[in-house]
Length: 288
Image 1 (cartoon, rainbow, N blue to C red):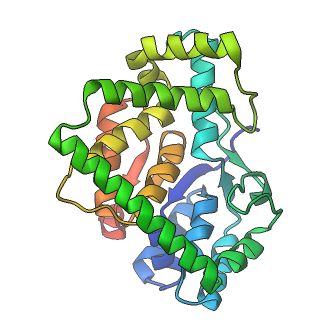
Image 2 (cartoon, rainbow, N blue to C red):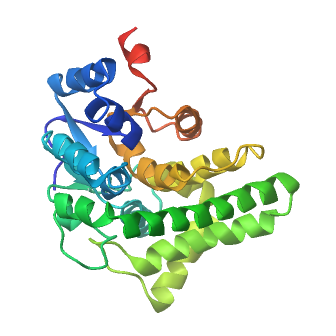
């Protein structure tokens, strides 16, 4: 699928909440100006998941309906996009500039939905399902568990307990996970072909990080997040990590109301020079 004729805009959930739930005038104007200039909103399943955590189901559904009126396209999962990148890197033997840009979106939500345990749900049905009290409680518990994992990794990095050997093994495992899984568009690699691909990618690590921008974005954003040992992770960190790294290299503009995420994305852009995406932290920055 070719990209739409419009420019692509990705926004974190908090920005959308400020514009379309809280009705903050400057935030609404920020989005309206981008849409008037030809941008198309790229939405994720995780955005809907976040909408569902609103104080009441009514608020969640109202927010979802207002954002859906913008006729967004739907971002494929970060793991699918990265699997396509890494597979392309191997298939093209890493030739500079030869890795084809993956398709990043679908027109229909049902084609990208992965959270709803195999159920075929439209976006409104999805928000209804996950805005129930039992579902929200389960989500909060899972997020707190993940926060604990992120904080442990950060403290281990700061204390030096994560050695180069550990980090090299983690890199190899990430490559293996993407190649043996495949994506919604490419089949997984198996047996000798899989082993060959993993060896090639690990051997050419620096090269791969130049040619696979979403994979590189996650790598550098993870390093940035773990470089602040005094900062405790927040439940939103894992969502930011997975959704933003999928969008950042392939959209024209990213809007975020999160100062820590904004700084992390600036860090990514300094390390992945092929990413030219415009970053906007708040309306005053854009309209100044």
